[in-house]
Image (cartoon, rainbow, N blue to C red; front, side):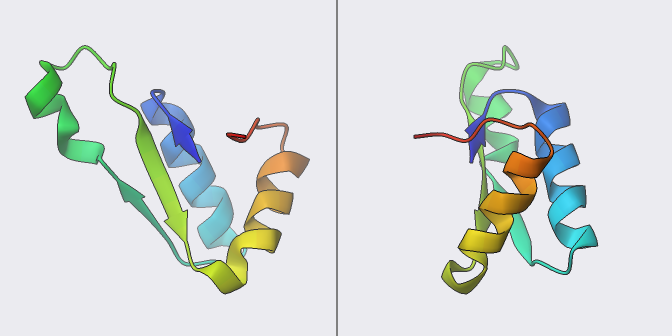
Length: 67
């Protein structure tokens, strides 16, 4: 997933890790380049084998995914 909301990144990371899915938030420190205005999206990566379950968990919690 991709979002500019840092709280959503933390929430989704906690959801996935709570279900035993390894995930890795990336682009977290990009605020240095953008001047901390929050325009560059942050992403959460999961292993391909966990992708289906991760998408289901995120969708079940009412969080929209990127197309």
